[in-house]
Amino acid sequence: MSKVIVIIPAAGLGTRMARGKAGVTSKQFFELNGTPILIHTLRKFVECKQVSEIWVALRKNEMAGFRKHLEQAGIKKEIKLVEGGEHRQDSVANALNAIEASADDIVLVHDAVRPFVSPETITAVIAAVEKHGAAIAGTPAIDTVKQVERTSEGAVITSTILRERVVLAQTPQGFRFGTLKKAFDEAIREGFSGTDEASLIERNGGAVQVVMGSANNIKITTPADLELAEFFMSQEDSRKANLAG
Ligand SMILES: Nc1ccn([C@@H]2O[C@H](COP(=O)(O)OP(=O)(O)OP(=O)(O)O)[C@@H](O)[C@H]2O)c(=O)n1
Ligand SMILES: C[C@](O)(CO)[C@H](O)COP(=O)(O)O
Image (cartoon, rainbow, N blue to C red; front, top):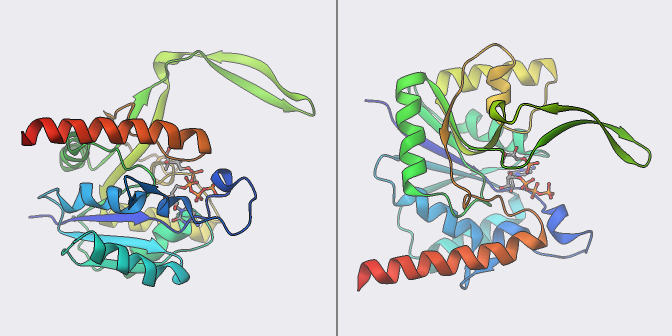
């Protein structure tokens, strides 16, 4: 039986959120309902029965504070920590190097700042990895998609891309451990840097299945996302209250 191991890269600086303001807390530690975003995200995986191991990549100076948040949140499951790297890909690579797993085990990578991932999306990605070997959550493009050339004044359209052929990649992104580790080792050797895990598999012709993600599974990136996040959090709270009572 394959283990399911989760990696949560949480070592970013949140520069797009902080807009250059010095001394601003990393966005993964911003609070929603009095609890850091990272803890909300973590709970989704702690509550998933299929998940056996969770790794979080953090900056060294945030590890002690994170342990306190874990205690306050009453999370009893062991959460393994690894130091993050300069870029997201480096943080995930550090975790992959620390993990002991067999080639067939499943690894899910999920951004610390996507706290609204649903249990259904997590199980759908795991099921698709079991069936196809690699899978990510994604959503269809809603707007018309243009290819552009950057200019000094902004951008000029060069063509319109068929919307039916476009998917917006989310996380979780799931793979067999052996496949992902090999792809990361190759990328590092060849100096390739990608913005997600799937791109490291695609570049060598690997097939990655897409399962339907959800519009709520936003990546909290800019200040405007925080307002939306507060709204989604209130929706989650009323759903829980309805179930409880
Ligand atoms: N060196 C890095 C950079 C990013 N991340 C993580 O990767 C996820 C997605 O990255 P992003 O939203 O870009 O976060 P930041 O890098 O913090 O944001 P920015 O690019 O605005 O600085 C986040 O959970 C972030 O903490 C990481 O673990 N290590
Ligand atoms: C992995 C990701 O969330 C998929 O959409 C995205 O590529 C991360 O990009 P970022 O620039 O590190 O936020």
